[in-house]
Length: 360
Image (tube, rainbow, N blue to C red; front, side, top):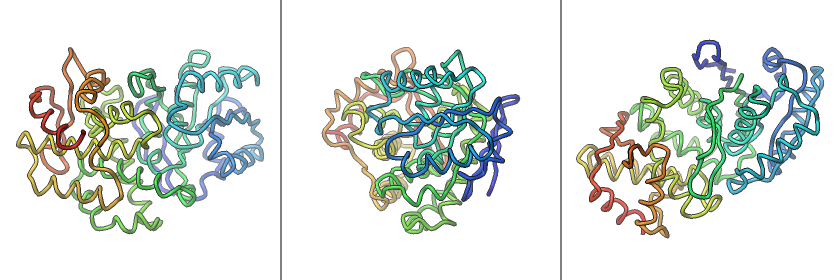
């Protein structure tokens, strides 16, 4: 097991990465306000890991409330959130109860938002079971549900008490989910660590083969980058916005195609290809480096374009993105591999040219 910390003063917490962590109640018990937890998961993850985690907690003297919701991005909405609230109230979970998010990014966002709002806020623990959740969404305290007009539009910042990333859970991860998670790993190299991007180019086949050492390194490096950024800018007022590389385009793709049509990581991959193309269009990124990005994403089996969405529709959806300010779309662009920048002065003609090439 390796451990990193997110330094946020009294809200600081640990991220543990390793194997066999679902059984490590010694890591969980010190975080509980009382020995009662509500484990929130979905219909896919529950048969795989619910009883293992709940059994370990029960052996530690913890009362476990099991909450299982439907699987899929299309269920990250008010209806599913109310299902969680109904169960919490029916089981008399008080303000000293701890929610445990057992699953991927959708479960982490849902359970985290439930924790942020239930009885004006209760604590929660992240137990991510997908690569994407382990390297990205479980860390940093972003919680949200979707709105028909925009992804993650309703939410709150609410930091977890603990993150347990058990690499063993990746053994059951569907191939498509694994590849989607790799998209977020690639993002970290592009925005913050060119050497890590080079390592990914050299070791992609090991990641796709689920080599434990390669996966462990990818998760740890990604989490280290995110923990550092979140520690410096928790509320996304500056530096943390760079973590949204590819997401302005990607969220528009998810909304435009319909939630659940593409996985989040797939939309982010296409979004990163678009952001790289726009960076090249503006003279920041070289043709060669733009090609390296597209090549790595394609080798990972990820999309590098979003056919089927009208460019006009894409522009409309991007205009309601959370990063838009005073009617202007803010783009995270690459000055070079490993160095990202936030720009609000992107000419409309450049955006149009990128969309005409990669969304049609």
